[in-house]
Length: 133
Image 1 (tube, one colour):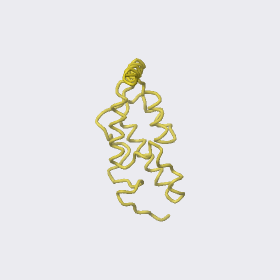
Image 2 (cartoon, rainbow, N blue to C red; image 1 turned 120 degrees about the horizontal axis):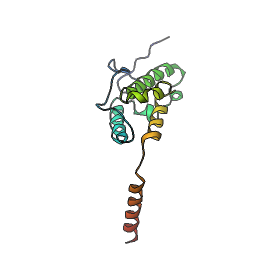
Image 3 (cartoon, rainbow, N blue to C red; image 1 turned 90 degrees about the vertical axis):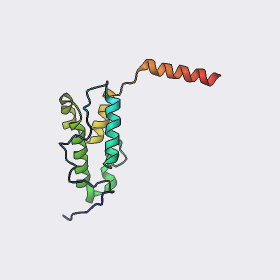
Image 4 (cartoon, rainbow, N blue to C red; image 1 turned 60 degrees about the vertical axis):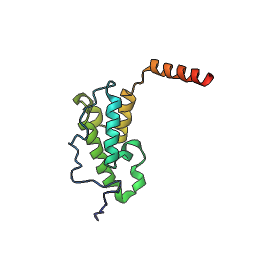
């Protein structure tokens, strides 16, 4: 199997310090109470490490072809590890058995991104008042 060298701008580049056991943000996701801040902090770090495409779905394994599939799997595993390192122990089970970092990301969003319904009502009410004037 030939080894492909990637420059640090390539989506599948992994720096030697990009390991699965490292926490890339200084907080842990505990639940709905801190999901918004946790998610934003993770997105910033993933963008900085050029791995946001793994969780937002813009970089799918099939986009890289069969010859780079193994490297995509490695990147996906590292991102899953970063997510696992940034959540409480109680959330690990769902992450360990997930098939992809994107699936984990979406599951955490679906479970913890709870928007305050009264706040939505207030915003719609205010925008309705502004629009009618």
